[in-house]
Amino acid sequence: MRKFIALAASAALAWAAPAGAQEAKLKAVSFLPLSLSFGVHFKRWVDAVNSRGKGVLQIDAVGPEAIPVLEQPNAVKNGVVQMHFGPPTFYTGVFWEGEALSLSEISVKEMRANGGWAYLDKLHREKLNAVLLGGGIGDGIRFFVYTTTPAKSDDKDKPMQGLTLRSVPLYKAFFDSLGARTVSMPPGEVFTALERKIVQGYGWPAWGIKDLGWLPVTKYRYGPGFFNVHTNILVNLDAWNKLADAQRKFLTDMALWLDDEWPKWRAAQDAAEAKIQQDAGVQFIDLGEWFKKRAHDAYWGDLEKKSPTHIPALRKLVTKR
Image 1: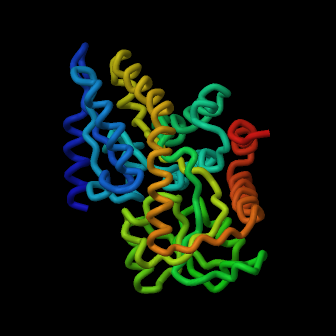
Image 2: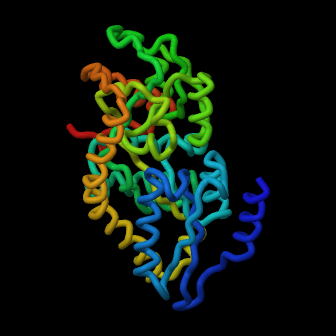
Image 3: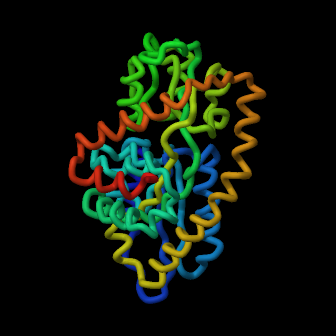
């Protein structure tokens, strides 16, 4: 907490509108350490920005050791930091509509073309005081349910009954429908909870369980994969407006560059992550298409209750027909 207060104070004092061609410096915070899982790829993008943006714009990125995960969305909203990298599930307390990205069936490039991205950017600006700059990191990677003990895989009604699963808003409606009890906690607390049997499983993408230290206590992976990983790059709206036109264009161009680069990064890591789990003996259990359908139906239904105006419109823009 002392680190957070110190960072807030220094950011408030240091951030000012760049004058003329002066190089802009932005502070960014990531929901994961920059050496782990999706945090690695955010750092990869930041490094590309800093290499190409000398004299124009530089990003100083830090991880959750600087600001706790659940405090990060408010930190970017209030300008404590100027950028945030993380999934929309961590800012559902501010607004729910960002979770349409987690249910998307089309790429960021397609959303930019059909108006879906502009719609979501407008909502981010209005409700989170942030520009939705990019969201490609994670796109195309699915989520699974991982457990330390076997679930009732022959029960299509409540296969997770009797299990307590670590959850976030993204999974809760689905996990409830599977009969599981749910507990909310940030990623950094999951290993201890698994080790102490406080939870017997968790939802997470196909990547990263080794990086986060969860692999030794994970025995089963249930699919097929569901949802879509979206870790967004947000820019505080006030900071964005203070940037020069050339600096805003540069950041936008780098977000578009990421749209094209990300599929190459993803392909290189997909096979490696699958082999990591296979070599560790994690058993994959395919429960059938009903599993994925229930996940999507449960969350769309939950979101439509929370946002009956925007979610139906967004659903049309982010799903295939």
